[in-house]
Amino acid sequence: MPPEHLRLPLYGAMHRPDLMAGCERTLFLTSGLIAVLIALCGLTWWTSLAGFGIWVLLVGLLRAMARSDPHLSRVYLRHIRYRPYYAALASPWSPPPVLACNR
Image 1 (cartoon, one colour):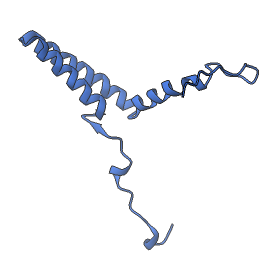
Image 2 (tube, helix red, strand yellow):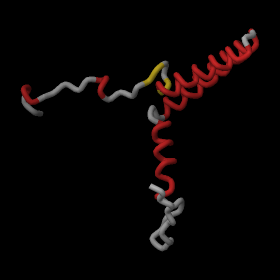
Image 3 (cartoon, helix red, strand yellow):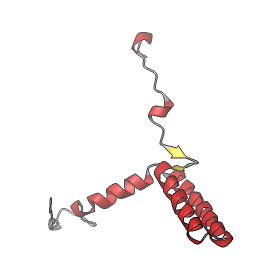
Image 4 (tube, one colour):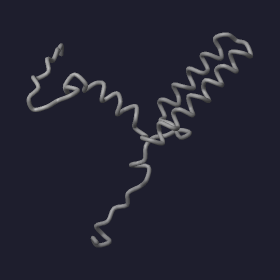
């Protein structure tokens, strides 16, 4: 155990995921925007109910996603970005992948 003068507090806000209502913040705000656009598109009670219903379903789905992994969307986007670099079934005897680098 280090001496008292060498210890630093680690605050929870520094390492906790950025969640809003139990969902990832960006996905929660995007789902709210989609629901509001659906509700305002028709300007009737039916479209308002449809927008609210879609929002409730999306928030439930996003909360289930965040419960399994709070960074799931960022991990998925990184997986999609790195997909050309890794073969799906790589083995030591497989040929190297053909990369189309247009950068």
